[in-house]
Image (cartoon, rainbow, N blue to C red; front, side):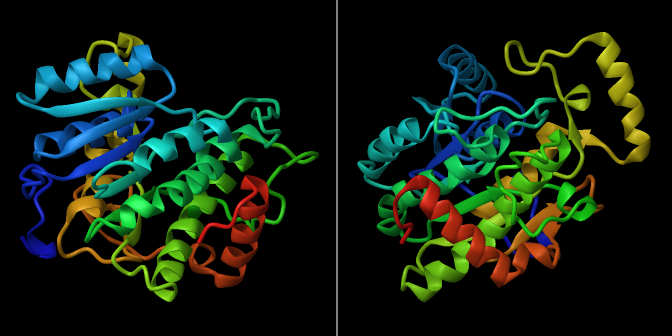
Length: 310
């Protein structure tokens, strides 16, 4: 299956492989998990809320006969939770893919902080994933062809940031916080691939994906996973005119980054029409690949998690 003939509805067999998806109980994370399970992989749903995670597992098993799925409780905004889960993942015999998907999509109006005292959107969307990747690298390194997929966003094309003010202590704005966290994820994904190669860990590849404009009201109804009011379906249905798509399709870019045999470290995948469509390689923003921005972000993140990454 070459890159030019990639079919998101007919995926290459993933039997025997293990993937971890953070924030897998709803939205993009759920559909990423469902699609990977449908291809034969064992998928670990790493979620904060166990009730919602169990509902997602039940939905996948109902929709994918014979699906192999399990749950780990993970709160990416809590660095102690991240350390505990990292320890469990390091004990796995293999880890083929770490999908860094969890996140706050609708940021709070007023600034909030995590248990560790970091701005909450930054802590959830980026810092916890940075720590989780560091903590599970051992399992990834002993699995040939393993990948880390960081979830970026189209917002990186609409807003820019040199990531100098990560905590937004006096300049907090919800959309600014969200944009910075997603720019940070893209910067991290590309820098991780450069550092893995430089450190002789080139068997692990780091890729970045974005879901385009994927919204709940265009997404299939799945009990306890995606339940949308009739009014929201009408409102979101109108978004088709501006290029929206379902979260089921939004997950296609992530899945391709995770399992396309022709994908390489440093690749960036997104919908063909930018906001929607089949997943294709795309150029990332200049800031996303800026090494100076990446070096500053990396140093600051290591300080905040209180341990070196590599």
